[in-house]
Length: 282
Image (cartoon, rainbow, N blue to C red; front, side, top):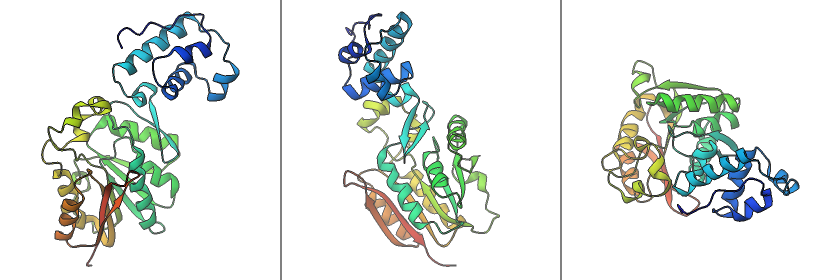
């Protein structure tokens, strides 16, 4: 919509909301963000007139959105598990379906348990777990310094105790420590290289290395599964998010590595989105 006209200074908030080019929810989100107003204030101040600076700022925000930029990057945050998480182009935008991963982790973590989040990105999963269960000792890894900075900020924002380490998967953990984790959780890159979705919608703006393994979509999942036994206690759980058509392959990988109670769980759309299992042996 390159022909979208700039919002004129002097129009009321009510008129700006009516004439803005997006759907009503996104119009409200962007106007609330730009003017630092709550939803209630948008109503009670509906006759307030926009200044020239406010009109110019709103026009710029709407153009960014019309060019496809995710609204979460424009406003700088997205809600996840009831918590406002900062997001930048260094990290994936947290999705509601990933909350399933948090719920399953919380169900399986013992009191004072120890958990690891691999490829933490914005820290959404680790922060949600640590915020909900302060008794848990939470560690989170990512290879991206930019992502770790965002994640640490989210932990600080919500008073969640998380240890962040820069690591290419398990590398920073070493192998000298005896198994000590009760749970490993991960939402790794799992989109197959060349998938058409990578060039569509919000994915065009998100970090490519957090979306795809540049291979068959299973390489990161294999690394996580193959290394889990070094760090998981006996009866510890491994839980991973994956693609809509990968559940059977992931279950087979888990079974081949000796995991028990291997199963998949469905997301809000009824798609098998998370698979995991319990490590057997001593």
